[in-house]
Length: 289
Image 1 (tube, helix red, strand yellow):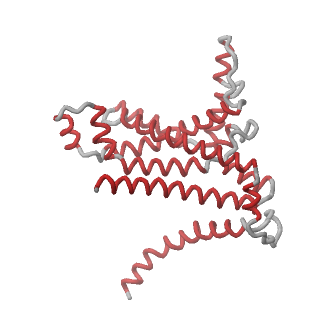
Image 2 (tube, helix red, strand yellow):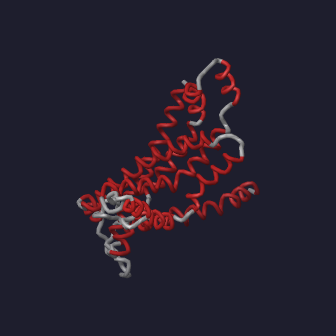
Image 3 (cartoon, helix red, strand yellow):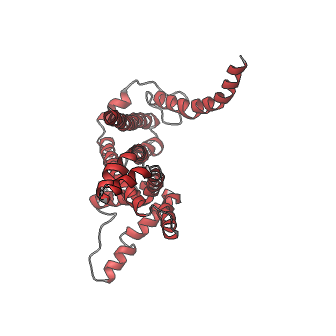
């Protein structure tokens, strides 16, 4: 009995936080997604799955979904590749590497809103880059005013702001690569390329999985940078699912419809994260078989 009370006293606070911070909000979102609540009325009307049906016919929501998936797919690949590349470059103990680690991680400590305003001042029509191009007699580039350029600019800024975390995680992972294996590969005459693909990369597999899942989840809920950099434009080309959820919920007073979108986004995010984790587990089982 005493042991059970001790266990309960240790698990209880975490369990309460889990229920209050996750179970209750998710349950409330699912309930609201089945209503037409506008955020003001005392008794939201229950409308069943109508919000989900409307969602499948909303061209704006479908476009935002594809934009979000594109950002998540391209951004995750770039974050992982660049993160690993820079981690390999600054791996090792030296004052110069310590300096570069700080510089690479610095963008991550900035608020996404600040990052967006900063880059809008750099990439805007009257920004630093176009001002310099104009002074050289070149044409202005539509970084934020053309739909394709704006989406590419948004992804680039997202990667710039977020890849410091990937670098840190890969640096931590590189410290776990068995040094005896690296030494054995060197003695056997393996090139740096062969050592990387046959020793370093397999040892980093768990870190790669963590980076992929974290990047994917983070990019799927991209919102604040969209607000400060592009405002969802031009012509909705950079409007993400999270941005549209907030817009429908609080600007259009359609909290029921916004909740339905958030539930769908949550299911897609969980499904993709679980898929990556299961693929990693299957690969590990295949390697150990």
